[in-house]
Image (cartoon, rainbow, N blue to C red):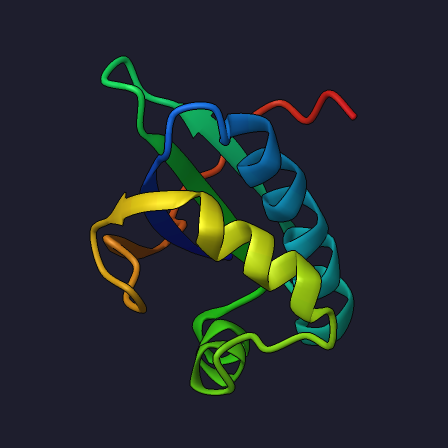
Length: 107
């Protein structure tokens, strides 16, 4: 398994807009590109941190090279509109290969 980690600061008052667009975008990326989905976290400093799981680096890279485009411009626009700051407009802050996985799946 392969993971990519991203972070964003969101404009005050746009947190729910961001979360809704992030959820829908994640659903679409999962359907179109074959990711395993993602988790969204909130850091103590207010940043949102997304941890996306992929079957392998090649699958993530193919999606990344296509900019993970999906045909729902209103979702993308809502996501971008909510963002005040991010580590990078494109690159994740970490990409990692899972070597041991002891995470209990509760779904």
